[in-house]
Length: 192
Image (tube, rainbow, N blue to C red; front, side, top):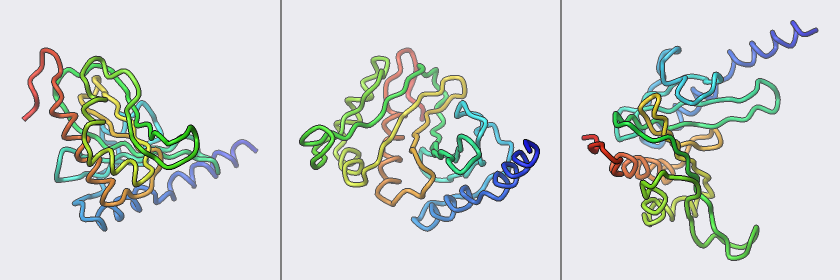
């Protein structure tokens, strides 16, 4: 019985086209994206072992995307990490976008702020002050997390699903990535 379940899960894993679909979607919005070979180190940068593989991105501060799946059942949870390499010694941090409404839980979105500990970098304020980022998150109903992964020398811009971002969302993620690379990390030079 359990062996049948294992084989079903393995079949689902190897027949999953989510990564290929995301790569095709990125290319459709004008991103120079290519499927990378399996086993790349970036697959392990998400603190997960459920990577479906890396998509290389050739232009802009985001250099790769990783589609991650938690669980291998009908209730799979997907997210996409967009990787921004940064050679500086980054502090461990995580912040997320919060869409503010006119009234709690309901009403139109009137603002975006960032919640979490940015370790005194001012990153939350910096991202909240960028009108293009704020507007894109408000318009697209996106929920974005920014994670510093010091062990692997990168930032992760995390989106809680595997679907292709719109062109507006992609520009938003690239703008976030630019801010991440420009933020002053104590004792570190900004990467060139």
